[in-house]
Length: 110
Length: 114
Image (cartoon, each protein chain N blue to C red):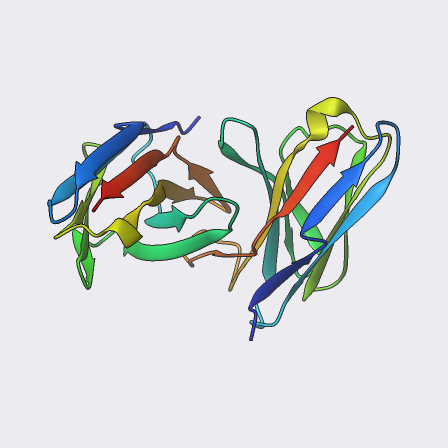
């Protein structure tokens, strides 16, 4: 049974810092891994999707890496801004379904 | 244009009532999902339909009955609502059911049971 864990559960940083969010999963037989952002009271916004054959994906200040063999992914956020404050969720895709991690709640203070 | 839309956005009702949540996607996707996000913000899949056929049912009480009239719609009907049903319910869709395609989510329906 796939289990997905995210560390840290919460993170508070001053504006401008670079930061790394971690995601680990127990079953390496995945199709892809998605990183989502969830703002309070809102739905999920897809940030990046890494296929199982890929090592990383980049979008603007975000960079996600995937090491399938060790069951790990990281989301790197460069030059953080207060607008980055949200909960970040990683989700691994097995056959026919996504399994979500526990989330990292990020607060970037001005 | 909203890709995956759910109605209602908020639902407050009494224990024991029956309620429905509707979901529609205009992406032309074959597969739709229902997820539940509990009070600890943990998201877990409930159901998945591919071309109107049920393909995943994750040990959900049979008070929950999904219905897919066509592949663009997946509704969720809940009978005899209980306090533990209070949660945010998310609908999602993807191009196919293999797991290789990204899933697109609606904004959620916040269900509160009094």
